[in-house]
Image (cartoon, rainbow, N blue to C red; front, top):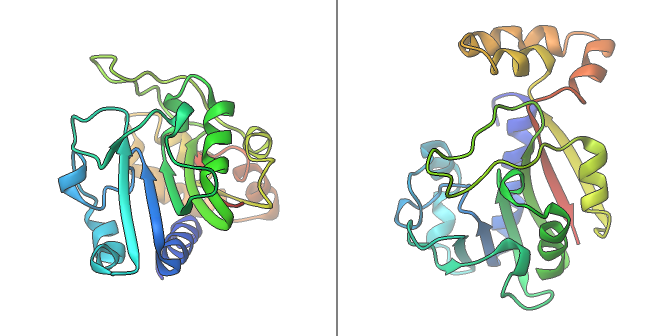
Length: 210
């Protein structure tokens, strides 16, 4: 697997979830794996994980808060309709910043996973405000490593992986965002900068195990 370490972390965790099979729920459709169940597709994710859509062992389902993009289920993450310990794998990408009660949402994510099952999430930390123009969803929160650990304290295992370092993240907040990757080597060049970049980052991938 190529790319920065956070992309490798994501690819490994996503492959683990799909390879385990069973009912896999993509809350919010953030994988953008199936354009028939979302507003657009991610070609990179389709190339890497699209084969699992035709795998008879995998039941991939998409939820969203609205039926506008034709999800399998219209769901409120604060009150998921799935039974306790009923889901074999779960994705929740860039959703928790848009929910008004993240503690409740994290409890629901944990509740519906089967014991030993894996979930993969993404949350922002240093990131621009991005509510929609029509305000059909708002932008409430940003998450530090401490906040993540608290939200998922009910899990048996939490792995937190920073996405981008300090200078690359700051560049993405400006019109100079295209130079961000050029700053990557500075962010991770020394022990001191690695320690800073691990906590001053664009966001985090989170792998949880119930």
